[in-house]
Image 1 (tube, rainbow, N blue to C red):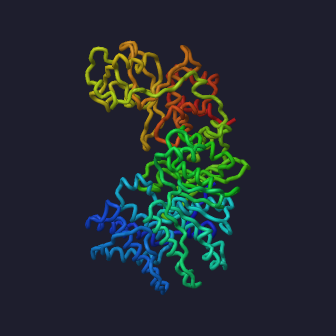
Image 2 (tube, rainbow, N blue to C red):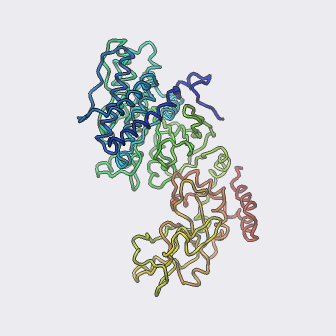
Image 3 (cartoon, one colour):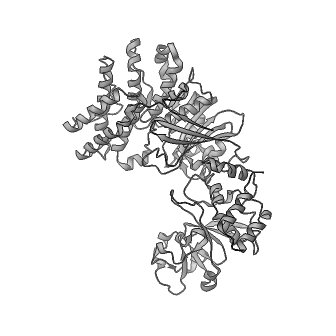
Length: 601
């Protein structure tokens, strides 16, 4: 089932969530002009400059909004002390034009554009370390809609946004509260600090979010003679203690690894395994904050769907809660300009009732239109910590359904997995262009070529073909036959799984080889494993196997953990595949046979 969310469409309820005005088309040009002029006047690339320019823009937008409502109300004071200087005349004119357009635009879009100016002017290092990626309006609308489809209580409930910088999700939630308040908007305005709570660690970003809320509420405050309520607090959400206080939690948390104190590791122990990712901590926080039967919706990378470091998070998300919806964002959407990860919208309900998860593909067809293709319902694995097999597109649905019931893994095929032991820059002095006494061939990821081809020396590593191990490093050598697999691939690469057998001649001629860290090594656990290395290589290089792997791997890397979890047919059913490989059958014949092995019964 495919459906479109379009503001001009017939479904008022849907269009209300995703609406975007025509002015959206003009904002990028004006924003680009402001950023260009800011750079020309040396007002970009540092936090003070970012605050100076953005404060001027926000103030100008507020004045335009106040003028339109005939209000004398002053803009709220910043939540941080600012040293503000007047803008150059040319830049001030561009800001005034931007403000005039913003005053006539949708408040959610205005919040986004203000946030984009601020984040774009920040130093790249600050954006990265703070995970500053503000939610586009159409994605905020989809998050709201997913929560509403699970009957989230926007009528009388409390809403939390724990990473509220910029205010896009906060204003989107406010629109929901206003819609359901009906004629009781005055009561909502009075009660709003309890009903809508935004938390943000960056004081200036928190102020921006509050200003976005104020702009939306200004006409209501004037109409009812009330002060504008403060709903955004400056705090580190991860330091807060929540006890099932909210009905709805909406979030687009920061991405990236987090360094935790011992106390924080203890606090989030239930969802941690190894390295901590900030967005995983926020998901844990969300389920602590939400009431029984409440809803959490989040925009995050897909890495938690399959990575080993997220196995305790996956288990926690399904212990006392149920995953209601997983919507994969099409990789072509470009949700965030400088984020390369695949992204997902996840809706979780804190309930003991369980049912299959609805899976959808979300595509941004036009700036103002979200296209959602509902792929169906899928059962998550019985092992709560296991990777989730989730199709990304409609043509992956049948393969996913067929694979989900397969109980076999690479260990059943007779193979163990390890990662190449040599991290090259730690062995730099031992690597050479020409062989020396006792040198061994160094196998790079570049030696593993598509379609099962082995190439040594690697053309991408000229001058680094040999390594001379020290006496205490001999255990790093590989003396037995194995299958090699690239461990890291680019987002644009056609195949995630790229495998080749290590030729017997390499071991026969040199006695052993040494394998670099960007290569996975699949070793037979016996002299005659149930599946030959040739059949295993052909299988891994198939489009079908690659599809199955991509459906639970949310990362560009091919980890040993995920390889061990790869859902495989019974090795007893591989007789025809073995024969096809032995007879040097065409890749099309081999692909058809592997598709048959994954066919849903």
